[in-house]
Structure formats: structure tokens, C-alpha cells
Image (spheres, rainbow, N blue to C red):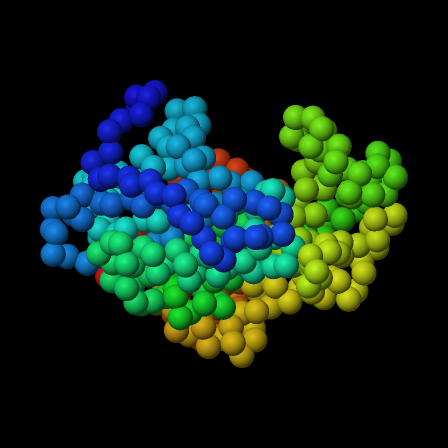
Length: 343
């Protein structure tokens, strides 16, 4: 491949979207967000045709302009998507919507929380309505999907489970699931880091984090992930963030940990609400790397089992040889799978 960008055969439209739901959010993050919409060549070639849509969301710390990032010897995600819908053997034409849900803590998990803001409402209500009003979409859940990796994969699962009125299909690449496996292992290292460097205070670490280049200390990843997830899953109504572990020992605080588990997509998939949602989806795609550093391959299998037990449409499921990173080449596989079932 050429080591520089090539013109898209479809086109990418970039907007600034002013969100009422994010206005006055507790972190003071921007309510005006970039919103990108990829239109396949068929959108202009067939001006009377309406198309399905898929919302593509990012992992923890993701910002929408990162979709342009290039890894060595690999095409960008935008180039992969353009090839999918315009190259040989193109997938059924589909509108791809890139949504920015970044927060000052790194991410929102695409849910409403008093610790971060109303990102679930922003995504599933505001953005969906705006896209349907401004583009020739098939504006029904049966023709609308959601896909993502890591925290984006979590967002795809949680919105598929909780917002079947908006999304009729989902794809998750190594999405956060089975919380006792993917998150709890960070709590001991996080408590040790707080004890040794910050007198047990997450607030002191957070102030230090902002005083220097991000992730310049080895403890930053486990601390920011634990704190950001707590802001999403266990913030009090006044915005106070509750860690699910004792920062002096790493011991679980059961009542706070229970609040986290209530957001686990594996557990939600086993509830009456989750079962009903899964049975209504037109397509479910699940994959993960067998060497995933956060053991999200195990969460993927648990979510697959929950889908099957619920009586959903048979999910696509694959574990492949890889870790958690460097799997952007999986995006077009899932997008094709959804596009073929959303027409």
C-alpha cells in the first residue's frame, strides 16, 4: 500500500453538533462535538435511495479525529471503510456515523451518568435523530446498527440491550464485559499505586496527572481506567465518584461494586429486559483476540452464551490470534456483517 492518504471514493462529511444533553455536563466538557458521516458512492449515484446506518464508536480515550490515525504498513480505518463500500465485492451501501463521546476522564461508556454527563441520551436520541433528519437513512431500528471496540464494544452492547428502540443490530470487538474479569484485576495495582505515590488519594494522583505529559508514569493506565469507570458506573447523584475498592487495601466495597455489576452487559443480557432486547435484534457480531490483555475474550464468550440462552438470532462469534491492540482490521468484517443484515 502507499504510505500516504488516498482520495476516498465515497465521501466524508464533517459537522459540529451542538448537544443539549451535554450542555452543563459535570466535567465542563464541550457540548459542541465533531460528528462525521461517511457516505458510500451509492449515496450520490442513487439519489432516490435510502440506506441503513451504522454508528461506529471508539474505545477509552478515543476522540473522533483519531479515525485518521495510521499504523505502519496499514490503511487507516477511514480507508478500510471506503474500500469496504466501494472496492471489489463491496458491501451493501450503508451510512457510517462516527460519534465523539470523549470526556475529560477519557471516556463516557456511552451511558448517562451524573459523574460524566448524558452521553447515552446524546448518542441514542440526539445524534440519531439529527442524522435521520439530515440524511437519506432508513430511519427505523431494524435498519440501524452500532459497532465499536473495547469501551466502544461495551457501548455497542449496552445500547443494543438498553435501546432496542434505536438500534436493531450490534457488533462488539473485545468489548468490556464480565466485569470481575476485565476490571477487578486493576484494583490491587491501583491501590498500591495510590498508597506508594499519592497518600491513598485518587484526587492527588489526578492533579499530578494533569501537571505532566499524560501516561508518563507507569501507574497512570490502571488509575485512569478505574477512576473513569467509577465516574460512569458508581457516581452519586451529586456527581461524587465512588471507587469500588478501598484505596488503602484494594478490598472490594460490596455496595459500590454492585453498582458496577449492574452495568455489566453479560448480567444485563440475562435480565428480562436484556432477553427481550436480544430477541429483537437482527444481527449480533462478537469477536476478541485470544491474547487480550484485559481477558475480554472471556467476556466475549460469556456474552455469546448469554445471547444464545436468551434465544437471540445466532450471533457471529470468533476468537482470533491477537491481543487487545492493533485489531482495527476487524472493523470492516463486522461492518459488512451488519450491513448485509440491515438492508
